[in-house]
Length: 508
Ligand code: CS2
Image (cartoon, rainbow, N blue to C red; front, side, top):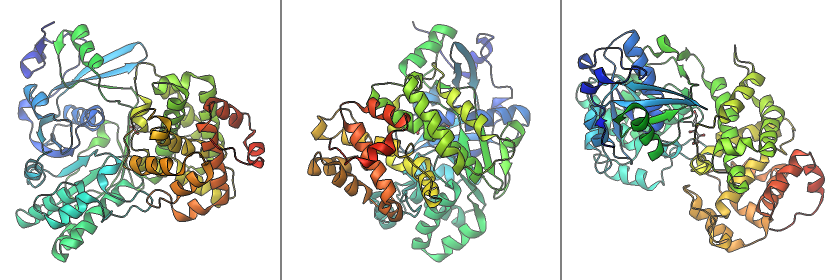
């Protein structure tokens, strides 16, 4: 097929079932910059902004910045920023062209294009989805990792930064030196207290650059926290082809997501506020209870299904949850062990939230690969699993279920080592370290767990020293590295782990 490419000229001729931007795109002016224009941003913040522009048109056009792959400036540039957002819910498909992105700059080779946008007086809000590791923080403490190679580089050459904290600090320095206008930096990543962590890393970096910048930031920059939610996996060729086949035009920047979406934002802005609350977002004083709910329940379930799913031979989340055993395991884990760790959220019943989350994961039209979710687990397990485990241990409560996905993360990385013939390819900042530990120690599970728990950037030392936690993780790793990982999950689910723990741990 040689279909016409999506463009402003094509908008008037699109099939009627494809929804179009309901405002005058030619009148758009930039007001928001977004760092990390991946599938999630295009399916979430850009859609909310598209809704806002249709409801209450204001100077809130989006300028996207990619400082890591993919390159997108050409693809989206050819389409004048337009792209198709598909909602897929089992057999239903709903298409909509989003118009809120005015342009995207690729800034992988040099920070200059990113800095030009971020330092512009037009930009009043900067949102970002740069993945957990983009913050260059130490997951277990939230502090800036001063040994991170990009941070070392950026502190030495602050005019040509590579890291997110370095780029933001330089942009703020340029704003201070030129027009001095305030700005809101709004993290939309799944890290706990994301506004506080972003504030920490940018301020720590700025303090190293001198007190003038740090003082200016204190007076002129806001770092609200936010909880963001919509399942939007990486786009595939099949998704791109499906738009051409179904609607007759070509679009290189299609995104696919589920119907559910949520955005809870701490009401703390510097300067003008994009009124996303008019179109379904919620502004609150404290995001923490929402964040716990989402990261522990929805993300906790996804992470659990991803590791146990890969070990059990399942490709996608929906395949893993369709398995009766994994489905039973994850529901029990959430209701029996996760739920009691949640802070009440007005208007949201936790049991109903758990059921809704589990049902979202069964959506067979969302092809979310377990390996995609398993990526960068070292940056995810603290907020999704280890913090709730810590809360339960502090109250003397059991962790027989929650400890299994922690062992699952270890097993996933260990099976990527030479000892297991590199069962699959992994991507995690700690992958090499764990493979080296696995190759050095071999099959003896207890010293293997001891060495992994000693990585204090991930495991807080008090948690790592907890005897109950260690015992459960050793048993979990033993079971998951055995020839029958699903048999082990079955035993845990049948409630026989405590019995197992009385036996000396078997080696893998
Ligand atoms: C997923 C998230 O890849 C992952 O880590 O758990 O991207 C998840 O789909 C989103 O947080 C849902 O809002």
